[in-house]
Image (cartoon, rainbow, N blue to C red; front, top):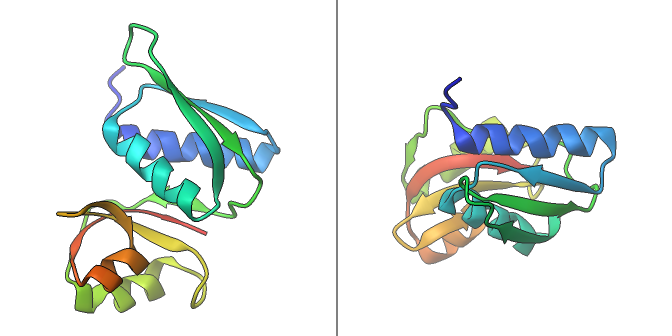
Length: 130
């Protein structure tokens, strides 16, 4: 069976593990985008430590969960967003002001919407978490 969206599958694995109350989840197959998204989530305290394990078949991430995620998901299609339009997308995907983050890919790398606004750079919406 073909896996169409690796990021979406990874985020659903995290969401399902959080809802079960697990303290750890294994995400496979891995990609650089998944690693960068996990790094942003770790910076904001949504996940704990994570490590990449190379197994010869695409690798996997072992992620420690902190129990702080209420909802998480990939944004499809991946919308192109200007920095002035971020407020509109916050209202659409996040439950309230200053709750959660949108994750974007920009020319500065994978960042949250707060960092994108601070750096005055737009990008492509990838995921949300709160």
